[in-house]
Image (cartoon, rainbow, N blue to C red; front, side, top):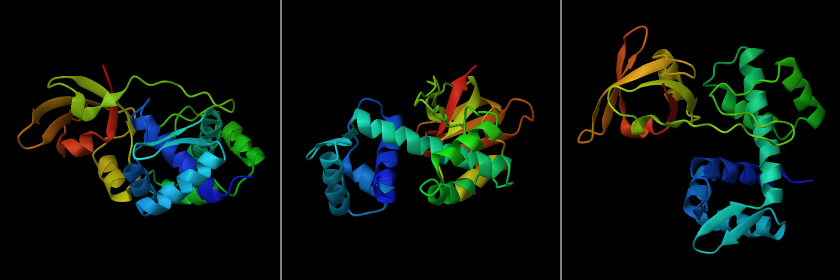
Length: 221
């Protein structure tokens, strides 16, 4: 049975691959996401390669094998269902769910996860809009694009927020930048590195940094 460290690395590699499908995950990105030194990450990746969970290409990066992807989807499913349970049933704020879900996902049984899924009515996404893999490991494809790639005047619906920082998530919620809400991109400034959006109903305007916009996935309308 995989250790919690193995599970965490595999899940993190999957999340990195989600952002750039079809490419190797650079070791510097993996070590940063795991908050370890590059040397520690490399040692662990070599161990994962020995377990046939990843393909490691020295000085280039790492990718999941089919067996590694299967484990990753199991862990991602657990994490996102637990986050949804914490928010919908226990009253957590969407900015609070990540850390507790990180701890619980390694401790609960498969039966517990399936009971949560059924109790919640088989949700398609977690509180941040991320797709929840099915029990069979299927993931619904999304045509969402990063907010910072939208054009001026374009109307869009928030699909997903790819960030776990409580402060950023609380900021977004305060301004209704949450999954399902619709906005219009008013202006963008390449020089200042900012984008200004307007809520489709309340008409409230908000200026974001382009780096913040890159962490918000949207569906053009």
